[in-house]
Length: 161
Image (cartoon, rainbow, N blue to C red; front, side):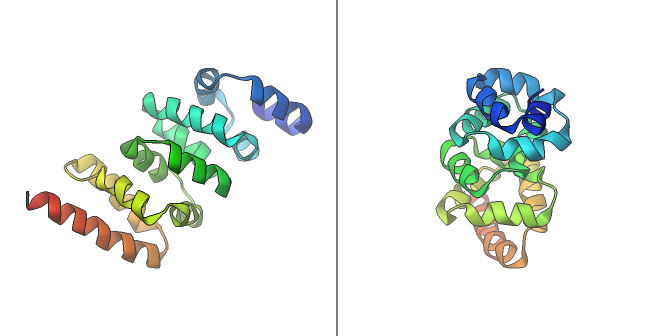
């Protein structure tokens, strides 16, 4: 519904979105046409998107969270990165962003200190280690080199404990 409303009546779509509860949006997310998310996600107010993202990550709906993340604006990324404390969830969602250029653009928006925190969620977990490796293998070379080194340093510290 949200995607069709947004496409046919953009001015009304924004008003309707503002009235929806984050839990309802998370409930409805699996039923959205993925093509509509490209038009819908950038129009969701950042604070509302943050609440929806928290709910999706709480439900371990990483593919859905990643689908929204793929189409976020830079400003929405900033709010999400600052407001989501679930580092493992962020890794899982980011791993589902498919275009490498979009994934790189998202990683570039993350402050270095915050990126280290997110990557540190992978230490001690084989599954999250693989998720982080997937992300690092698909981002731009300069980012992969920078954060790959950081990631190895985090893992080395974990192994030496």
